[in-house]
Image (cartoon, rainbow, N blue to C red; front, side, top):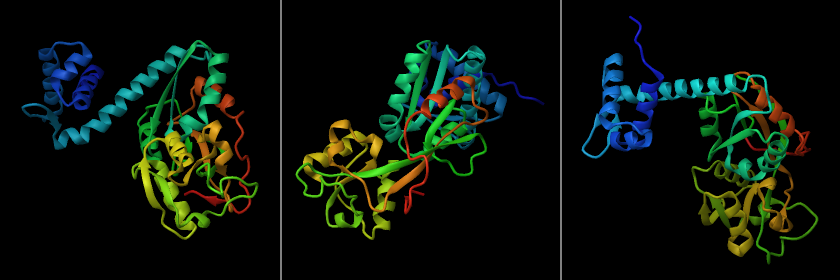
Length: 305
């Protein structure tokens, strides 16, 4: 027998999970707590088991709830996306554009293209979702979060993938460092004995730094760890040690202490979507392509995996 589960029930369930409390979820949704509890009970009755365990001050997912939660989230996101596409229709001048990316690209590459896009299409609202790691980005886009993702080229992706070129990584050094100025690229192994400005382990750029330094034959010793991309550049320039990050993410006032590498280090960028590109996503992609990356893979490039 087909079970009837409504989108409203799924949305209520996800709000309870996100808030960790039926009371706080009811306040967020502006519904009465008894009504929210009733909707949850009906959902659990339809599915044949409890989704959350009610504790004195919180709720937690049951084993069934842990299995059900990602599927419920995917359904709700897909419904929201379908509504946006239907509303926008074939008109690229109005509507909402949902973009998803990693933090370094959000502060480095995307601002210029989003600014041009907004000037050309003031009737379009841009919503930007940022993630600390590429794996989280890919998982959420796979669930239907955004119209378009911009990030490192995904592996084993079943939807459309549009290559954008190659992103260069540089080392930011303290202003008074004798290696911070000069025309020649810097060999990374010359910094093996420095204390480094590193990213927190869960940050995607932490993997990049670990890989690059290992390829150069050393393990970087931390002076400090941060989750902020621009913050890493400023901590490095202030004297705490070198920091490795994408060239586009280095603030303009610190470009003079950002050194290219020998051999060059980079990763391939791509725009991708869960299924087909919406008209708005396709139109934004044309604007994004105007930005300058390495259009071809440089010689001797060390590729971030």
